[in-house]
Length: 381
Image 1 (spheres, rainbow, N blue to C red):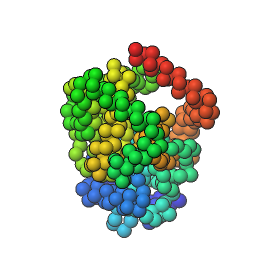
Image 2 (cartoon, rainbow, N blue to C red):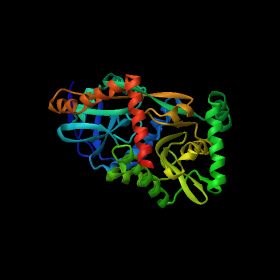
Image 3 (tube, one colour):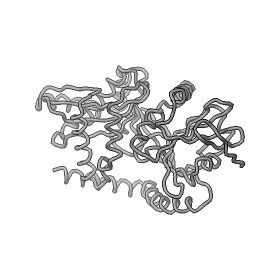
Image 4 (cartoon, rainbow, N blue to C red):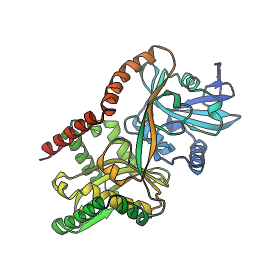
């Protein structure tokens, strides 16, 4: 590997063979660079790849406003931007996927052929990174595929043929589930007041309600409260105000008798709605308002041009009921030799191996999941 420092309009860069790597804070990306990023993602989707909103420049721009350590490596060849690699940098050059912990699709945005011109280790070196950790690496990210240590299924709902076609599939595959959910929906309306659904609720008060419900759920189930972390709460509020068709926050709310009973904040691109933060008022738990909300969301999303509702990785009974297929995502870390890589490995691998031990033993994993559910119910009442 041969790295050569070069000069440019931003004051420096690193040449890796025929590719020049320039590091900038997300806010310093120019309009032409953002448009090029969008074009690369549009071409990726047209070729059959995913169109996740987490891979659009708007998510990185918002993450950059919330995370001062965020950077984007812009890859140039012959004066043209041929790639973008968003990341966050910590002590000892420890790198993380942009928004790690809440971003559900990660990787580099590259023009065809760039993967053959630069290696992961060379890119990390150009970014002054010892490691780059990821937990939802997009399928097809060949530059980092060898660094993956775990693979997960991310269930999706296929809405390409419209909601009626999806509902017919659900009726054929899970008739009792659909019948029960629709019955609870009718009962909720009869007993608690007329139902009203808003697919894209702009009221900040509704978002605050969702965040309060979700924080309470995290506490009941002994999970870390993400909304107690300032940058995550700020990122969500920021994305809620966005209106870009390629990446914007969508707050969906189900009301009964004028009161919110369930809500979901997700992220959408032109064709994908990514499930992110669902929650409900536990006083209405007997009506399964979260399930009712998901059906309403799927119908509205299909009407809005969404073809894929990505439910996100992680086991859940409702995901198994709703899904029509899965996407693959990966976890791991790309590394280059050095003390930073050693520290990263020691901080990550023991926990990962323990989680893997439980996850790969169905009886043990089932017991753990049932224990969490029971604890949530006890604390909920």
